[in-house]
Image (tube, rainbow, N blue to C red):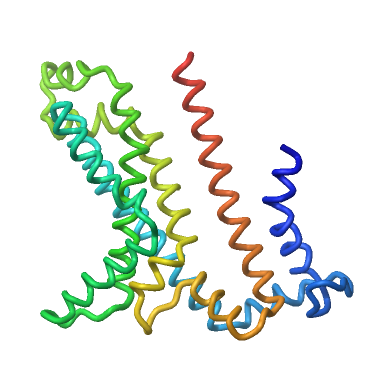
Length: 255
């Protein structure tokens, strides 16, 4: 386990350490500095890419959570065989290689562009992120629906609640942990995505991973170490929050 941990995390640790290196060397330590982080705040390209990434991630997580939660509730109400079919179909984007998903979405958007005035850009990028995030929300919400007492909804209807009110007051509060987990996973995947964004963003929009990739093609600047460190810490923080939320929910269910 120790050797596995060293193999997996030593490159990340090295990147974090040299993001504080005063020199530009990737092998020689020249002293501690925060200059590379301060230069990030002056780099308009990186700041614009960061703004685009955060905005797309928030919007994609919101819409994917709404669509995925509604789809999970609909699938749960279906008969078993029909539910298994739709679950299998909905999970395909999650298990499909990113490059295939990205190319297929790009071809779809190019076809739509041929019959409409929609160009590859922010809108197509957002649609692509929503598309590959929805399956993860469904997978997060479905276990919560399966653990529910199937008579809760019927009891709410017997007490005079409308179907919509019973959904909002009974079902949604019970599956909220799954919904929140799905939203955090969707946000994490969006902020970290490169392949699908590369094929669907066009030339007018760049996300932060795309900007980092473009910077590495020219020369490896210490600014890349700094921005990669920040991105790693954001993703790590979200994963910690997800794990803590899941542990609290499992303890609540046991008690």
